[in-house]
Image 1 (cartoon, rainbow, N blue to C red):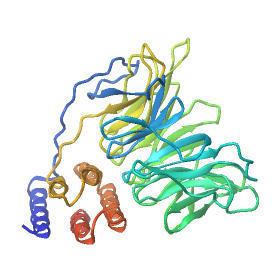
Image 2: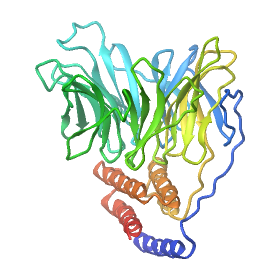
Image 3: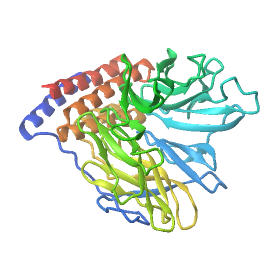
Image 4: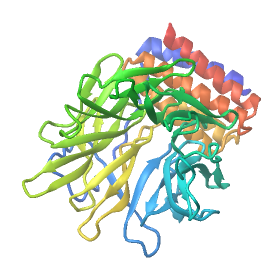
Length: 452
């Protein structure tokens, strides 16, 4: 059967199912709970596995900082940047140049990781030393240049290969501007909010950027930049102090807020519809949301004061279950840095033996619905490799879950992000036009269905 004909028949079947039975329900499969130690606020609502990712040989500590939808992880072991493959085999990242320090910040679904390094033992440029780079498991390190001799860092990259960071290169007054980088156009100035500097933090697959910037009056506000638009001032969301960490494809923003810079801070979720929602229990001393995925699941960390010392614990927040402690490897410390669209969370935890090891927490996974079968067929027939199929499947699974909840606008945004990723795969040659068009047409038919 021709693939386009299979697409049409499946689309008709989905429409019939939706009309007769309502939204498609995805079944959840349970996993055994292997949490060794629970903190005082552990909710015990869902089964969560915690797995020790270990360290490089002879190292004593490690940290996992980001995970993509393929399951690839970046982080560090005893201060050295490292990479965990899909099979969770750790390897030290070898650099072609000598550097005083190297920082990996994010990895996308194209297996592209970004960060910055400080060149070793050279006279500092007029405005600093940091240099941005891109790294892939197959190619290794790719320098993105010295930004015309100026300092700069890359903080995030989306699944279209669009990266964000900051640099001094756009002005002659030592002001730090946010920039958007693409392989075609290089670094593009995103400006500021009228003050001397702006620092972007996260970019979603629709090209929206969030960060913080100085205003003309010297205040620090968070901003939202949209392609084709301007840097929008979101203020401090009604608080005296606000720090932003992420934005998902629905435009939901997370971070922490406080009444004043030195006051205890609190993890928050901001949505255009509902504004600010504080996430952590008021019994916690402080908390911060560090990442949000396209299902609206949020991770971060919070502090508990037992009268003797502060204890830091990782948490997960969902709209259905609320605040959930993620537990530890047996010690009194854990922290969560990132969550992908499959519900895999990475960070670090202590045990009774060692201070800190990189860990991954795994939530109960979704089984595939009828829409996902299309992607699975492409993988089985060799039209897509397994990594490409996994990345595309994650976006469609998230869209379906949002449809089940009646959240049509976020679902449309995710379907559009899916289309953007397919177009990117076509542009890079990973997919031919003939292979990509049916996927795009299928997503467009679903968009039309959602819009009716």
